[in-house]
Length: 147
Image 1: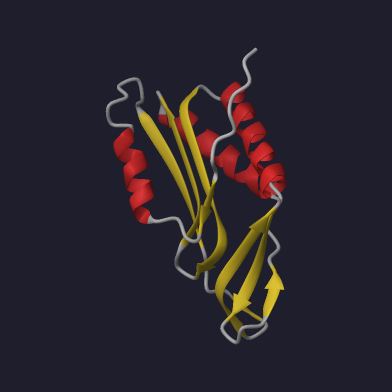
Image 2: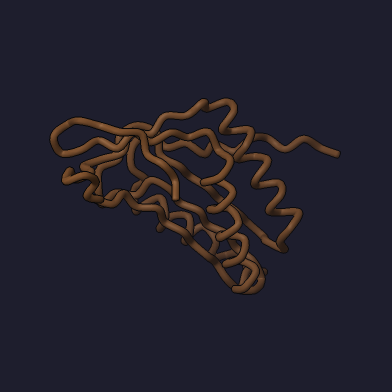
């Protein structure tokens, strides 16, 4: 069995909308695809104990996280009949309103693409060692807990 190369997952800062548009455009020539499903994670300006989140600063054990992303990707391809899957996650500071996670799956049928995207998001949240420090408008911070 051939060993697949680890995909580059991390993006420094916010994920630019142009990256999303280009990903969609790159798949228009693939005529075996009938559906795409996209999840976009965006930073919310949550109010916590009277303070407003201005940004989240993401850090990760990159080598370990890369391996976990790869394992999740391989498991998704084994579980779902998907044609393509792309994952991008931010590192560094991402301001409220900006995008921090982009999951994009393609399949012959919509149900499969949607289920695979949901699988990716849940597995990423549960397993990947990425840490978010919520930075408040007053520049204090706290570590984010995934929900």
